[in-house]
Figure 1 (cartoon, one colour):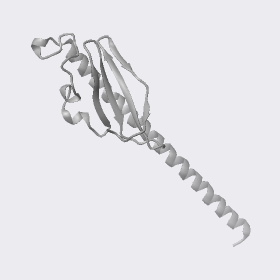
Figure 2 (figure 1 turned 90 degrees about the vertical axis):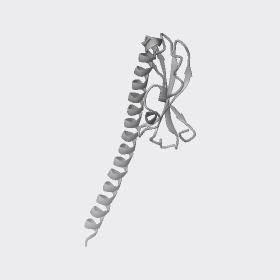
Figure 3 (figure 1 turned 120 degrees about the vertical axis):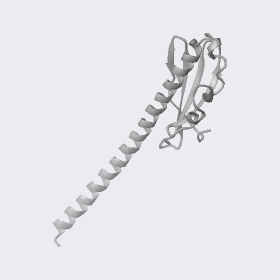
Length: 139
């Protein structure tokens, strides 16, 4: 083979290698983003259940304009939901006028941390917190 052919083969291998590396990075970023979206979706479902509990009269098993009685995710939905394929969910704080739900994503960031988000639920609507990358594994 001539030198020109060898150079073209080497150049082709380099270009394919770069394309594969970029593709892997894009796939990982997309997987993390999709996991975050799924966790937010699950938290919104939990928030809707919490607001339903808030508005339901105590005679029907609700909170009667209070979030009291919600001590875990299992008190809102099935216990299996608290640790599903998207992430892990917990109730952080409960008061009469608001509740804080926490979700941990399952996709590990490139720095080895896991994403975490808190959602504050009030009778008038949901307040979504910002993502924080926790330094430890999912609790």
